[in-house]
Every structure is written in C-alpha cells, then in structure tokens.
Amino acid sequence: MTQRVMRLLPLLALASSVSALHGAWAGDGGGVYGVAPPATYPATAWQGRSEAVVRVLNRLDSHVNDVTIPVGKEVTYRSLTVRVVACVQRPPTLPAESAVHLHIEEMKAQNVPVFDGWMLATQPSLGVYGNPLYDVQAVRCQGQNMEPQPGALPPTKAPSLGAIVTPHMDADHQETQGDGAYHPPQPPQTPSTGGPMSLLPPVAPDPSTGGAPLPPPAPPSAGAPPTSGR
Image (cartoon, rainbow, N blue to C red; front, side):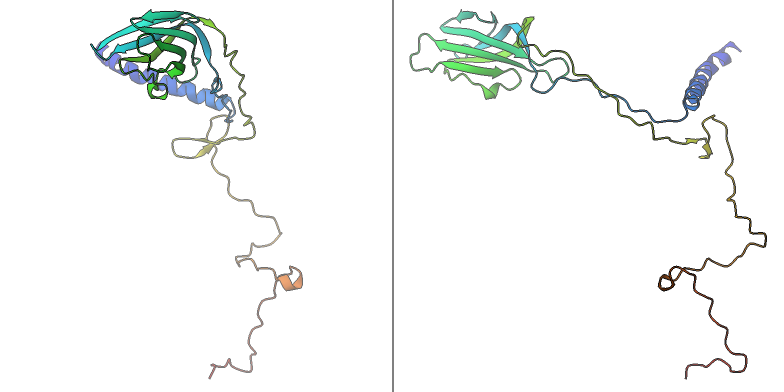
C-alpha cells in the first residue's frame, strides 16, 4: 500500500500544479501581458581595470610567461620593455572581451619597430607585435575598477499589450470564458419578422439601380411554349 501511494505522489503533484496554473490563468482574465526585455549595456561600453595580464612567447626556446603589469607601469622581460597604457574589458551583460593598450620596445634589436597600439584578448591577429624573437599577446584585465566606467544599466519598459485578449480553450478545443467554466456555443439568432423564415438565398443588389435588389425573372407565357433555340 505504501509503495502504491509513493508511486502516485508525482502524479498528484503534477495535477496540483496544473490546477493551480489553470486557476491563475482563469483569474487574470486571460489577457496577454508584455514582458520587459533584459537590461543590457550598449555595445560601446567598457569597464576600466587597474592591471593587465600579458603573455610573452620566446620563439627560440618556446618559453611562455604570463606577466602582470599595472596600468601606467612598465616591466622589463629579458630584452623587452612592455608598458601598459590602459586596460579595459566589457561589462557583464556584453560578450567577454579584454583590450590592452601596450607600448613595446626591443632593447637589443635596433631594426625591430616599436609597437604602440591596442591588443584584443579574443582576436590577437588584430594587433601583432612584429618581432622575430618574441610574440606578445593580451590575456585579460583584472584588478580594481577604474575609468572608464560603463555607468548604470539603462531602464527597460514592458510593451503595452492590454488590448490583446486570448480565449481559453479546454481539452476538447472548446472556448471557455474568463471564469474557467465551459459555455456551449449559442445558435445564431434570426431576426423576428412575424412570419416563416425564407429558405431562398439572398438576392444580390444591382449597382445600376442604386443598390436595390433585382426582381426575379418573369415566368414564360402560358400560351407559348419555350423555344428550343433552333
């Protein structure tokens, strides 16, 4: 007996949930209500951070090292001097991305140009340091928040859909009223004319006579039979 009751518990819980949902739907009058979209930052918003993580690869011995550099400071790695000018990342509601403004110089090689520009963490090919020995990439931004600030999320407003009302349908696809009870469809009402209802189809109005209905065709003369067309 106990096992049978335990097996019926999920079904009872499901029936209770469906009943509560139907009651809530019937109680609100069956109206359709707009839902406000989630608040998001604009695509141009960035959040400044106080530190940048830069990855340096030595192509000669395949050594990789991640270097943490504060914004406004420079670090010497072997023969490289790396300075972080700015480090920004996307706010939480936007796709993850970090951008680092770097100033890189090679102290030993005189023919290597100085790099001064932005590097993106997810798109390293957009900012490449042209050094035959070292490869430098931006990894991420971290530390405390600083300028620029994205500000507060813009407010959102739900669309107004108060005029839209959807009918309730029961299991037999019959329309119900807002109280949730089934109301059978009513037969069409015919106007009371005081006489029997005509079974003839309605007569189309004649546009040339101002909308008056055309008279029925006259019956053939009783003395002359209809011609056969020969």
